[in-house]
Each structure stands twice: as C-alpha cells, then as structure tokens.
Amino acid sequence: MTAPRRARHASQGQSLVEFALVLPVFILLLAGMIDFGLGLYSYMTLQSAAREGARLGVTDCTRTDCATNVTSRVSATSGGLAPTVTVACTSAAGTAVACSSTVPGDSVTVTAAYTYRMVWPLTFGTSIPMASSVRMMLE
Image (cartoon, rainbow, N blue to C red; front, side):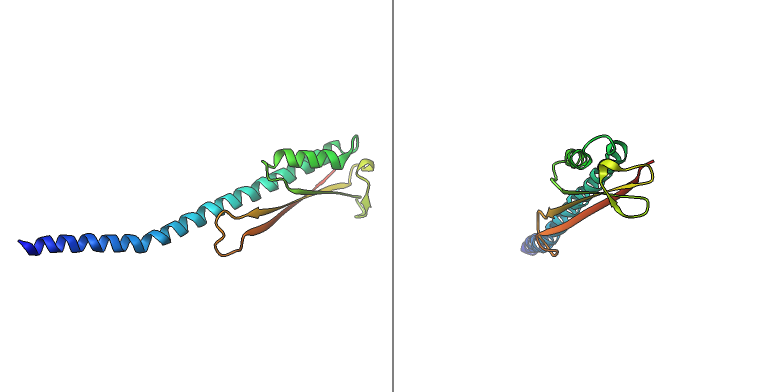
C-alpha cells in the first residue's frame, strides 16, 4: 500500500515543477502581448488624430489660424497621448506657403510624433518613437 501513495506524491511534485517552469514563460508572453496591444493602440490613435488634424486643415485653414486650430484638434483627438504636432502647407508646385493663404490645389501636411513608454521593457528598450504624417489636398 505504500507504493501507490509514493507515486501519487511524486506526481504532485512533478506537476509543481512543471508549473514553476511554465509560469515565467507564460507571464513573459502575456506581458509582451499586453504591451504590444497598448503600443498598437497608441499608434492607431496617433494616426487617427493626425488624420483629424489634416481634415480640419483642408476645411478650415483659409479662414482662421490654421496651425493653432489643427494642433488643438490633434491634441483633443489623441486620447491623452500629448503628441508633438507640426503643420506645414505647400502649394501645388511644391513650395512652402503660409497656411492662411492656401488656395484649392495646395496641400496641408500634419505630422504627429509621440514616444510610447513601454509598460514592461522586454527587448526593445523602454520607449518606442512613433510618428504619423498625413497630407491632404484642398479642393
């Protein structure tokens, strides 16, 4: 009767060792998936905010202070990321023009940059620079 009891205790010990070996790998994979998901969400939010700013730029730049309004729109739609925003206007010929004097055929380029701070820095360091640039033409 003592042999089955020893076999049962040995298998419980084996399960504990297997669990101890698998748990760190599982936690590492889970942390990587969560961090990747948060980074991807930040990048998609940054792209969307730059697109919103460019859309405002092509519909509203000829009447008001373009750079200030576009920067405010990008900041408002960035979901709290606080990106660095750059607004540039170019003529149809490709030369830089003041955004307040654009005409149909000119374009507005909005660039939003953000540094994503990783929650669990695994292999890429502690931060990942992200940038999104959107160019739209005035019609």
